[in-house]
Every structure is written in C-alpha cells, then in structure tokens.
Amino acid sequence: MGAYLLRRLALTVPVLIGVATLVFSLIHLVPGDPAQAMLGEGAAPADVAALRTRLGLDRPLYVQYGTFVAGLARGDLGTSFRTNTPVARMIAERMPATAELAVAAMIVALGLAIPLGIVAAVRKGSWIDHGAMTLALVGISVPNFWLGPLLAILFAVEWNLLPVSGRGTPLHLVLPAVTLGAALAAILARMTRASLLEELRELYVVAARARGASRWRAVLRHAFRNSLIPVVTIAGLQFGSLLTGAIITETIFAWPGVGRLLIQSISFRDYPAVQGCILLIAVTYVFVNLATDLVYGLLDPRIRYD
Image (cartoon, rainbow, N blue to C red; front, side, top):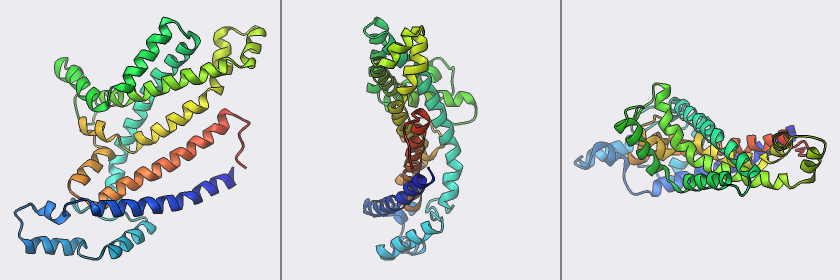
C-alpha cells in the first residue's frame, strides 16, 4: 500500500505542472486587460500602464510564468488583482462553504439513489422499476440551471418556505443541495441498478438463497456490496466535481463557495485567483481519485496494491 501511494503521489507532480502551464497559457490568451477592467473603460492610458507595471503584467510572459511556478513551489498562489488578498487565503475562506454544499448534495444523492437502484433491480420489470428509472431519466435530463431557479421560484418565492440565496442556516443549504444532488442521484440510481442486476445473476446469490437466506438478505448482505465498485467510481468522480465548486448552482443561489469565486475572478480577469481555483480543482480530482482507488480494496479484498 505504501509503495502504491508513493507511486500515485509521484505521478501527480507532472500532472499538476501540466495543468499549471495550461491554465497560465490559456488565461493569458483570453481577450481583455485586467488593468483596464479594474480602472474602467474611461481610465487614462497612463494610469492603465502604471497599474500594469504594478501588477507585473508588462513583463514578458516567460518571466511571469517563471514567477508563477516559483510561487507554486513555495506554496504561494499569488495575490488577487481585484482584492489585493493572497489567493490561498481567499480559497481557504471559500472552501468550507463548498465542502458543506458538496457533502449535503452527496447525502441527498445517495439517500435517493441507493434505495431506488436496489428496489428497481430487485423488482426488475415491475412498475416500480419503470417508475424509478423514469425518475432517473428525468433527473439526468433536467439541467441545474433550470432546476435551480424552478426550485427557488416554488419554495422561496411562491410558498416562502426556504431562503432563496446566501449561507447562514441549514435551511439555506436545502435548495442548492437538492439542485446538485438530483442529477447525481439519477446517475447513481441507474448505475446501482445495472451493477446489482449483474451480481444477482451470480451463483453465490443462488447459493445464499439455497442455504435459507431471505431474498432481501441475499441482496443486501451478499450482492449489494459486490456491486458497489462501479457505484463508488461514479460517486468519487462526482464528489470531486462537487468539492471543486458547482459553478452554476453556487451562482444561482449566491452560495459563497469556490465555484462562485472562480466566476467572479474570470469576469474581473483576476489571473492569480483563476489560476488558484483551477489548480485547486486539479488537486482535488487527483486526491479524490486516489481515495476512490483505496476504497476499492475495502469493498473487494481480492484487490491488492503492492
């Protein structure tokens, strides 16, 4: 296990360097001048030039890139052009809100998907199966940017049951968590059903029933655990995307997370903040994938890493 972890961690270094280089290159190709955006269209050219010099934007790109990489090596993500605040601090302030939303959305997704997938697999071909898969299809088809405003209109504006935006109480978490969790629940429900159906055909399930185990005991104790690997794979990948900030949902509900910070930074051409947010996304995906691989060994003792 230790050797496997070291190999995986070593492989992350070139990945992160590649991501950092790509992000730096693309962000500097985006049309627009951060100095002009900060001062406004009516700013004098001399003021814009002075601000570019102060921000270091007048230096050659290779010099800016060298400064960026040297800062990364020290753990320094730079300073925001817009707020003059260290990017690492900005991200650290926003990350708890994103983590809170991600965990809540995952709880919603798993709470809906696992029971629906199990029941649909056990009752294959019944009206329960067709109904569950229809709901899953609807959940996959409905985009977040439509579902979020719809929930806000119904539950916040029309019925006045829940707050529409911001973060403060557990009630503020309900609408964004349901918006994010609905689509993920649909994917996981279909995956749970498909994976469990394959396991129910295996001989060990038939043997468990022959030994006197009830149908649900054979399903839950024997088949379900063995069907979890593909479900865990999808859940891990989706949880990585949730942890890095659900950009659309956070924007709709004014949720103060990393996704909203990224959108604001892009609109202001805040190069250091954009680079820091995207690097966070890359690092999060790498480590969530690593954690997912390690969970495989817990689910299936036959999997070895050394």
